[in-house]
Image 1 (cartoon, rainbow, N blue to C red):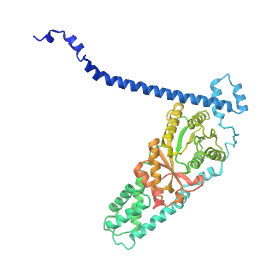
Image 2: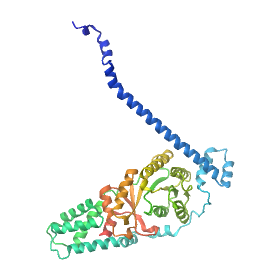
Image 3: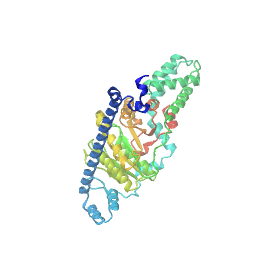
Image 4: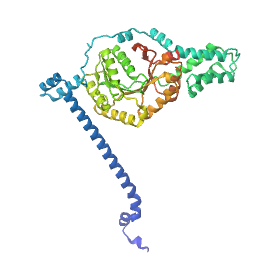
Length: 422
C-alpha cells in the first residue's frame, strides 16, 4: 500500500500546498497588494491632515483679521462656544477693506427687470440675440434651394455642408439631414418653409435630449453651485446675472470669490455683490481657493442662505493645477456639507464656435459637469454650436445669454431656442 495512504487525511489536508513555491505564489501578490493599500492609506491620511492644518491656520488668520467691533462682540459671547462660532461665520466677510452695506430689501433695477420680463418679452430678446445666426442660416438655405425642383442627394449634401459651416458639427448635421430626408422625402419638391420646420423639429429634439435632467437640490441647507470656465467667457458676470435671477425668485444668495488667481476677479464679483445687495466671501488675491470655498459654505450654513455660488479660476492651460484645485475644493466643502457642490456649471462663450466644444471636453476631464451656461449668443453667427455640444456631450444647457443685462440671461428652453435659430 502507498505510504501516503497510511497518513491521517486531516494531516494531509493541513500540509497540502505547504511547499515554499506554493506559498510564494499565493502569498506574494497578497503582500504586494497589502503594501500598496497601506501606502495609499498613509498618503490619503497625510493629505487630509495637511488640508485640515491649512484650514486651521487660515481660520486663525481670519480670526486675527476680524474688525475690532466683531472681535469684541465675540469676546462677550465666549460663554457659548457654538453660538459664538455661528455668529462669526454669519457676520464674517473676509477682507481688510470695509464691506459696503446695502439694505436687504433693496430691489435693484436688474431684479425688477427680470421680474417684469414675461415669456413674450424673452422670446423677443432671444430672437433678436440669435438674429446673426438666423440670418446666416436663412441665407445659406436660400442659396441651396433656389432653382432646385426636388430634394435630391446633392441638395441634401449641400444642406449638410451648410450646417457644418454653421458650427452645428458633423454628428448633429447628420441627424438633422436624416430627419429632413425622412420627413420631406427624397425627390419631393423643395419647400424652404418645410425644410426649415423639419430642421427646427429635429433641433428641438437634440437640444431637449438632456435638458430635462433635474437640478440636484438638497432638501435642507444651502444649494451650492460651482461655476467653472476659462478666463474671458464672462464667468464672473454670469454669476452676477444668476444672482439677480435667484433674488427675483425671493432666494437668499451668497457669493464666494474663489478665483484668487486672476487679477481683479475678486473685485469684479464684489461690484456685483454691492450692486445686488448680497455678501461676498473673499480673501486676498493669491489665497487658497479651497479656503475661500470653505468659508463660503460655513457662512452659507450660518446665514441660512438658499444659494451659494462659488466663482473659480479658469486657467485651463495649467490643467493639472486646475484639476488639483477643483478636486480640493470639492473635498473641502463636501466635509461640512455632504453632497456639495450639488451642481457644477461650465460657462462657455458662443463666439468661440467649435472651440467651445474643446472647452467642454477639457473641463469634463477635470470635473464632473452637470450643466452648461452659454453666453454672448447675440454677438455671433455660430448659435448652431449648441446643437453640436448637445449631440456630443448630452449635457443639459441650464441658461443662455443674449445680451449685457441680467434679464438677457434666461433658463434654457429647447423649443424656444430652436424656433429662434431656424
